[in-house]
Image (cartoon, rainbow, N blue to C red; front, side, top):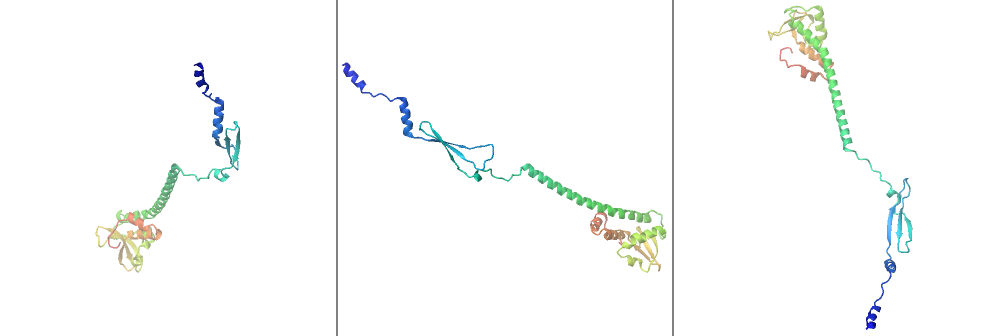
Length: 234
């Protein structure tokens, strides 16, 4: 009976050693593991290469294969134009706006300078004529003093649009009186050499002076500073 029990145990095969099992398993699979690493350097190299490390089951041995995968142009850092930051665009827009405002201010200063120049030339004359007419220094029919008469003849009368017609046969003298159509309005008169009495508007003289001396700015200045007048002789 002992012989009958030993015979089945003797028929069970022994398991192979563990080392042989792993050796046969790896050798049968013949698996290859390939690891790729970019070849880096702290300095620029004209030709970049990639190193391929191939490992296998041949006793742990490995070999390194160098293969040029990409050309130098593909590996070189691309040249990209810098994109403007939003802050830079805003600063540029603000700078353009400041330039436009500065140009507008320059134009305004030019206009103010010419306006001041016109006022410097005309305001004293207007004040002078008003003094002659409204100060009470001259009564109706009084002849102006030679000094005042000279100012009227040289600085006012030549700019009247109908100067020659007003002078007529010649000036005997300049006087002050009431306008024939507006009894409450006093104005200047020319007494011609034949005794004729002709009124003339000093406002027309002032406007004529501005148009002659400041043709580019006359219309705007007159529109801003002169009221429309509907008096006879204006």
